[in-house]
Length: 249
Ligand SMILES: C[S@@+](CC[C@H](N)C(=O)[O-])C[C@H]1O[C@@H](n2cnc3c(N)ncnc32)[C@H](O)[C@@H]1O
Image 1 (cartoon, rainbow, N blue to C red):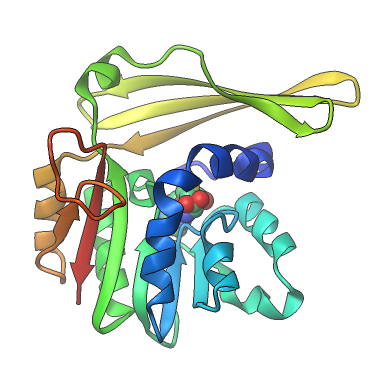
Image 2 (cartoon, rainbow, N blue to C red):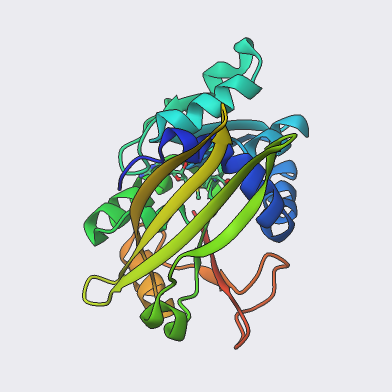
């Protein structure tokens, strides 16, 4: 996985508060606020969801492998709250206390291509949960047609990041069917100091099918899971766009 770069992190909140909050923020907020103990967000990023839980009084911690993403989050936090956030990898993170809820929201596990690393990550989560603690992660359900056709230079976001200053994001995808990977290329373009700046970044995303996810969890210490089909808590059905995997220790 290539680390989320500086300008992707810089514009992340502008883009995803607009195009993602409506889908998942309330779900993760409700899961977090009912917890009396500690909560961990893996792949916390810029704190899009984390800050909301923290502001609701949740005793939440966050880890991520991207410095640029975490720097955006540190800027939002009071200094005395910085201890909550650390640069750590899902596969080998460590805390000397345990959590009652661990979440890895918005496709974090899709950044781990290798199945032995995925298993290691899930078992590491298990180790850090209290008895009856819950682990929730999500992946998108592969849409076979768009997966195979790929996307070609689609502008999925355009807006102003400051009055009169435009930013736009252009996405392309290439499938690698053998390795179950979609290579996603993002081009970020923005106006700054009278020039059009540009950052070009590609990242592989490992997609999952339903029974692979079930097998993966069954091979882990959790042994079983429940897969929901949306953030309203509905069962999987033919219109589902998400796998929301819920595991209990
Ligand atoms: C799509 S972002 C989601 C950020 C945040 N959870 C949200 O919902 O806005 C995925 C995040 O996972 C992080 N990530 C990827 N692989 C990771 C790993 N192995 N361990 C921890 N974080 C990881 C990335 O750096 C990125 O910040």
